[in-house]
Length: 316
Image 1 (cartoon, helix red, strand yellow):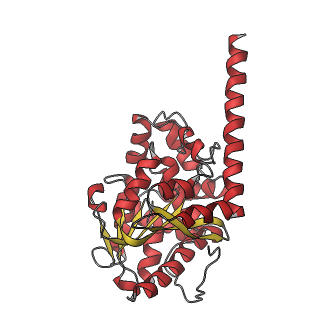
Image 2 (image 1 turned 45 degrees about the vertical axis):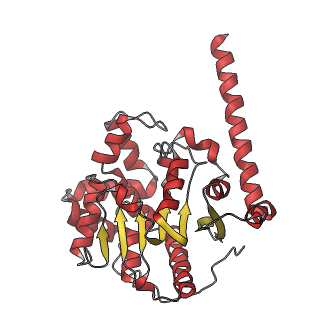
Image 3 (image 1 turned 180 degrees about the vertical axis):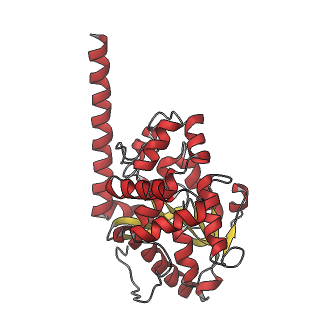
């Protein structure tokens, strides 16, 4: 299993994607209509404290942190915190590496398929404010974009695409989730989405339905992160921490590659007609995979013990 990028490109274009404080502020003002003073304060606070804006949305929509319900659905639909969070977070160099690694893997996949990069059918799920889509589009790809339809984050991203002349040209919008499930994609990209979903296993099964055979899914997840800064990561998904490669394998997608820098950001899974014994053996033989699995089991066990202790204390 390859554990580092196998193509190195120095010419990937970041130009035009806001990465500085001033650029992010101007982008939000331009495409959201929010007032300058409030926008500057919110961008600054997000830079100082990751998740600050979404935490305020949690209060506004009376969300119980780490629990999926109608209030959280309202946050996703009507909140604007993710606009700030995704733009500020993307500006960090280590976050940019995720999509650069993904682009490198797409280049290799196109070569293996004997086709041009622009001929690949690529779907991006849950791109927030749209920076990953912009990055891929300005580096020669055509992408389909799916975000929560009608949400403020979705509408903000659409305005950005239209403002750059990319909408319905290099970036195509999908309005229905069912349109994703037709087995038409060479690659699907899904960064930090699974931990937000009430049933990640169904979502992983859906990823398989989206792909052609031998198509690839480039995925990151944060099942283990349930800190105050991440109130929309679900407690119910903690049990999946460290198990992502095996969850994909059970759904007919084998781990073929992952990044070491940052570790597992992203992982690449390939859709197989059938899973082979060596796909299971390669997971068992990989030290990083074993360590992640063990760490996940330890974290889950600790939480179970803490829950028991709290229950006993309350009873006493």
